[in-house]
Amino acid sequence: MNKSYSNRAKPAATIAMAMLLNGFMVGCVSDATNDESVQTGLRMGRETSGRPASVNLGMAGDFVILSKTGISTTGNTAITGDIGVSPAAATYITGFSLKSPPSTYSTSSLVTGKVYAADYAVPTPANLTTSVLNMQTAYNDAASRAPGFTELGAGDIGGKNLSPGVYKWSSNVLVPTNVTLTGDSRDIWIFEIAGNLTLSSSVRVILKGGALPKNIFWQVAGIAGFGTTSHMEGIVLSKTAIVVKTGASVNGRLLAQTAVTLDANAVNKPAP
Image (spheres, rainbow, N blue to C red):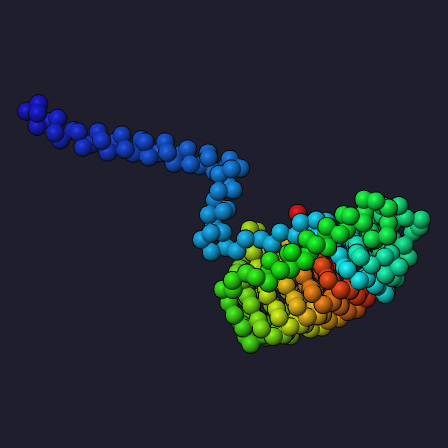
């Protein structure tokens, strides 16, 4: 009788102990996920399981606008963040009525931030050289990513709702109507464009689901052009030029290997 009872009770006791241990382990995992190292591991795991890694901007990420050959504006432009040109001198920053004499930087009533140029006092020239090199490295990094989507819409992405990932086109990309990017605050979008990027007048890039402009990268080999009163979200890495037409706005960064042209625009650096 005792032996029979013992045989029946042992599985029940084992199950109870397993449930207790399981509950303890779940509690440990719940507490551990608050640890920064574990959170980092979880993020890395998600990246390796399909989420692209972000593009490292290096010191180029210190600027809301960075250009090699010049930044010009007309009209009532408002910029939040630092801007800089290199190897061009300060004379190639036009329309900003820079206050002088400059030291390591200058200021402008149009810029809530600092204005840097290659001919300012040290250490500005060296810092700008590094920033421009980092900008070019970031461009090449974005351009080299393996795409998950190719030639979507034959280059017309107007009206589409785009999930996170790497998109690639061998020609121009046109956004004639609003385009939506839907994802959470850790999701990454990389757009590789071999031609021009054109955002039509009054058209908007819309973010949903917690998507952030700091995680969106537009790598453009040609001209990145934003029509009148349009709205762009994300980091624009252009090999040619960035042209922002009258009344258009940008939440992100404009990083050009040639010139950036503005006309009564609002350009705001993305939240960190």
